Length: 193
Image 1: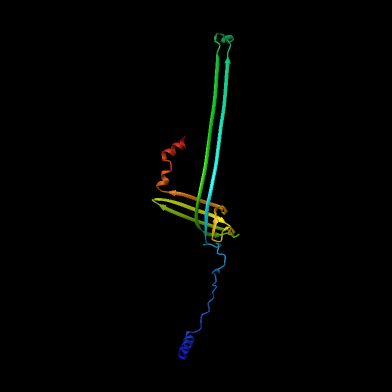
Image 2: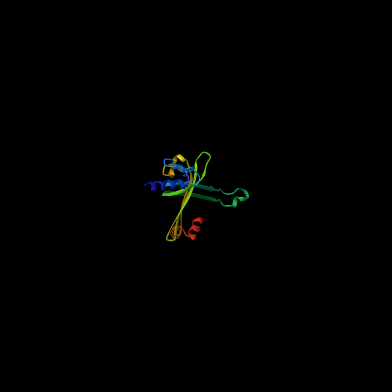
């Protein structure tokens, strides 16, 4: 037993001093620290739930009618031989027009964005994009906005209704998108008429 203890003490002495290392590293937030986005490069997931509806209806009706009558008598003097003349003129102009427009748009999605700038007042400018391609069609979602740090939840998510200066763009490219567009001739005729 003495030999074993002496070998252990000798091993400890030869190992040299133990390096003291802290459990808390600089720049590493603690276990209980708030990990919400607050600096450039942090990620924020935006829960997009946008619904826009609008309706516009207009009706116009105009009517105008003019009449002109003139009856002449026999001429006097040199013009006495000229016959009397009668003139009747009627003008009528009617216009009736109506138009109606209904728009309803709904977009529900999630997109993770990156903080690209922190404004002097602490607001975060976020930007992100997502492209999904299926069967030669691509759907692209792009978002740029400003958000207050206090509106970002503990899990780094924020509702799209809390975004300021939000620019949300959703568009498609591919065969399905082209099939939904009017042809060139139809667009030209609509523009002319």
